[in-house]
Length: 314
Image 1 (cartoon, helix red, strand yellow):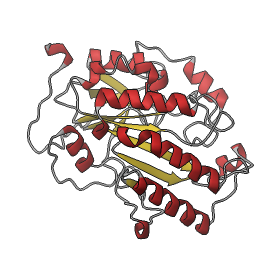
Image 2 (cartoon, one colour):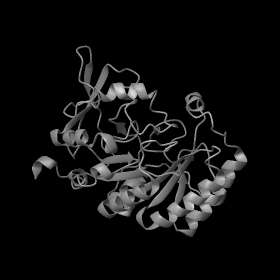
Image 3 (cartoon, helix red, strand yellow):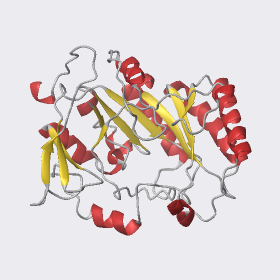
Image 4 (cartoon, helix red, strand yellow):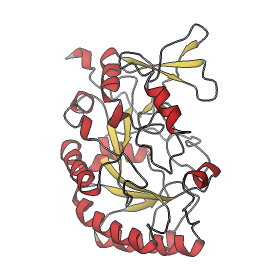
């Protein structure tokens, strides 16, 4: 089983102590977003976890604590750094700070385990095609020695986004093509492999791959292990990533990025944060009397029994 600790919220940035306690205690609970009274228990012993997948906009709070996980589990890291400032990503560190934190993370875990995400790409009067290309080149120059690849995607124009960002300019096909061509040329200049996230927008004519952001091949090469050839459905339509189990919860990320799909409102986030208990098996709140607790399916994708050493065996 692949454990995902970054798709629904930024656990690394805001809930790191909770995550570390879950690993120490050896289990975690997670609610089903569609049926919140269904709670799944996942065992976190290393023989049950094939790899831990991280995704964050700020690893600084956990840099000196990550070894408690990386020393005993296979891992992979996504670090999102974009062109946006506080007007779009209010609580995300500025670019110079983010760049330095990524470099520090790379030194700790190795560049082969670290992917840089430049997404979502969106246009406003302040963030033009030219600004994206200029910022992307600056970041490539800084990050090339520290990352294994770059992943980008274009923003999805869902209704909530148009309400949250009325200044948003819908991307035309020509603008997407100009950006993709520019990103590809810049990435090639700095020898950074580049790919899109999902198969909705693909640009093979520019040498941009359209493989999954997290595949068993990527995880295997990064962790020097071999996974079975597994048929899967991805994480959503158009997604080629291997299926994973997310332990986060929606409406819990105080980054408050204005393009975020995972937060309904700041009020909902603050209400959930008030219910967070770092000692609870659930990220938010505790088990209720009417909750149904079940044991999750944790089938391994490993080709052979590449058993990992438990924190409790040292």
